[in-house]
Image (cartoon, rainbow, N blue to C red; front, side):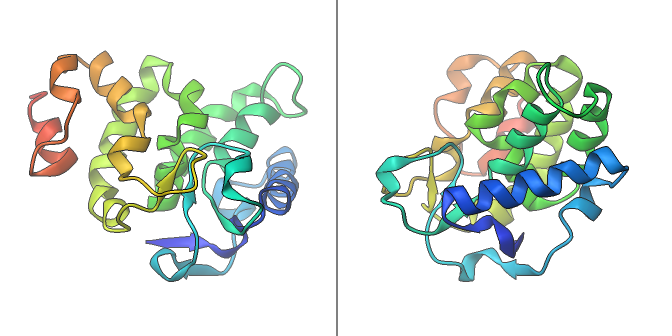
Length: 188
């Protein structure tokens, strides 16, 4: 999976850069234009893939703050934000076009995006499309703890979407051997 290089660093630095890039939406930039950056192989980056923060338990060390782009976009298009909320659908759809954007959407910090029923199926479809790439990073995901966990343990957004789409909650406790794609086939 390729990840924009700017997402690796200290929380405060990544957050400031993310906010700067989000402002480009107000000037008509698309998701891909706002987040145009050197893409690096995520597996080669040190640290955890942080899905919720800021996370004081991570000890002020550089990590991969993948939750920030959609979190900051949500804030910027909210009631007190500077951008029009009508940008939300296009931002979300564009995020789901890449593995790293989908990972941002899966982050617990970004659950507000998934509450809208029209965003649930697209999230599940993108998660299935990129699951192998994301899950292959191994237990390097964190919701603020200093130790990594599996992707499934850290992504309640996809479980929420699946439950809203009709998958019984008892099937969401553990991922089957075939991973998320096998679980989603149970929806059919």
